[in-house]
Every structure is written in structure tokens, then in C-alpha cells.
Length: 101
Image 1 (cartoon, rainbow, N blue to C red):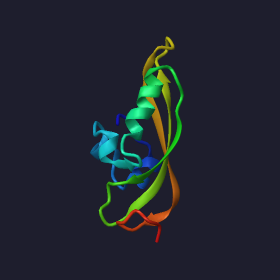
Image 2 (image 1 turned 90 degrees about the vertical axis):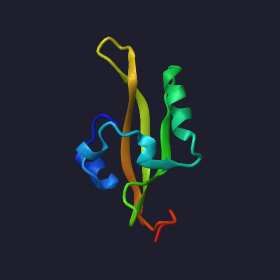
Image 3 (image 1 turned 120 degrees about the horizontal axis):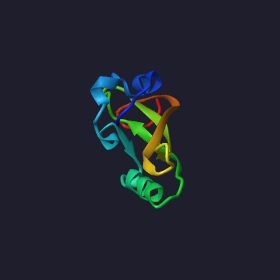
């Protein structure tokens, strides 16, 4: 993760400087677990992804159901430079079981 906005800080329950450079898979769990890998492979192949449902893992006491919108990120010349991920809240906080309270 390279850039984090205030909304993502709130959903991930940590500051931007704490998560910068940390792999997203350590902050958010997807089901199936390899969903990130599949999404990035599609983006690298020139495709678009869409949306993944996931769970924030950063706060042991309170997990949140989150939605990830993932798409390609191009440099100024239009060459693929990575992926843009937007994290949004799905619902209320979840218990440690991952099920809504």
C-alpha cells in the first residue's frame, strides 16, 4: 500500500504511516483467500476487475466488512503502473468471527 486517504485510515483503524508499504493482504482478508492475486493477474493482463468483499484485519477487537473496488492504475503515458484500490464500508462493525453483530 502506497497511499492511504482518511476514509481508509478510519476503516482500517490505523494511520497512513502505519500501513504504507504493508501488503494489503496483511490488512484485509478476502474469501476466497487468493482473490487479491486473481484480481491483480486480471489487471496485469489488461483487464478490469471490479469489486471484492473482504474483512478488515487491523483491529483485533473490531473487524469491519469492507468492499474493495480494484482497477488498473496507468502512468501518464498510459502504461500499466499498478492497481488502484478503493476501500469502502459495507455495513456495521463485525465481531471477531467476521459475522455482523
